[in-house]
Length: 444
Picture 1 (cartoon, helix red, strand yellow):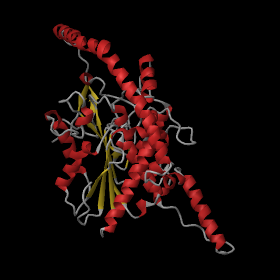
Picture 2 (cartoon, one colour; picture 1 turned 180 degrees about the vertical axis):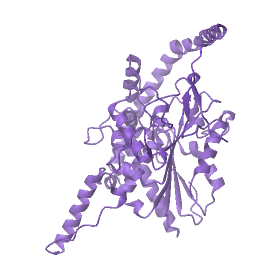
Picture 3 (cartoon, one colour; picture 1 turned 45 degrees about the horizontal axis):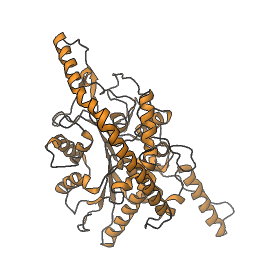
Picture 4 (cartoon, helix red, strand yellow; picture 1 turned 45 degrees about the vertical axis):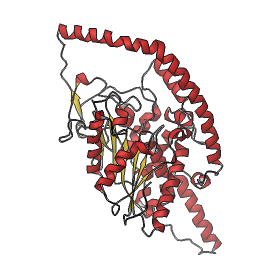
């Protein structure tokens, strides 16, 4: 955490992902600080969910982050500076935790005095991590995966029931009538960066909030990169188009078959020898962490960790309920004061509380792309998503995001590269291009 100095009235919060720690976002933080001094922005790299604490669920994590943000704002104000602007950046699962925290901050009325400026996610599973494929293998993955990451796993695989709603938390998190979407809509600039290739942690469709994946076979498509990004970032207005199909020459097909045969040998060794051993170790560790996570959540729920859980959970998370509570409080106060025979009409709701119009996957909101793939002329197969996931797409697209597809080719696993999680790795150069682009778009 930075020392409190400078006259900046803009707080920038960075939230890491699953199994993460603050150091994973060091490159983002340093890039911000190299661009903006302490009289322009304060930087808070959240630390309360570090390492195995990310097992504890999005709700618990969101409450911890909210507590950190409120404590940081209080500390800054005690130093003589008032926070007037807020930006939030989430990496991987940290984007979901950030969205939950934003809802709590909205419910607490923070955005009545603080301007919400930038909200950005990097490789965040907005639609969960359920495999959108039919068949036994996919079903096994979806079942086992949900049971190896404690509460967070259940929530990201959409098999949980959030409080008394009977719905998955991520579905509630994307409800147009929830404090979470209302809070998200306060931000002037909503942006996401999604890997189109080699992100085995958060695949394209969920990071890009999309019902399609045009990048499943790059040999069949033409990518349209932005200028001055070294072909790393695609043009959000027209990222991809179909390529005219061609039949490869016989020699090329034979070479491809030979390569496939050779490369399958190490995979056979991996599947028959390494995978069973690794699975036993992983499942054992997952079981231990699930028990520890349950203990931490029990302590958190009791309020003994310093987080005022009751404050966050006593407030309704649906806007209609908030209005009902406000009306009851207003009427009770008026009646107690022995008010007039006819009470004055309550003031009209603020614009921020007006119902959001559900978006369509083929429309634009406030000039920002909300379609599966911008351009409006390309058609792609629809993925086997759940009803809840399609509804989540509509709701999040209704808010509106600028979507940047990222094409990283220099590493086999692009999830860490997109935020330059380990700056010393030479293969992360394309990730630096992504961060540079984000910094250039960042609004102070």
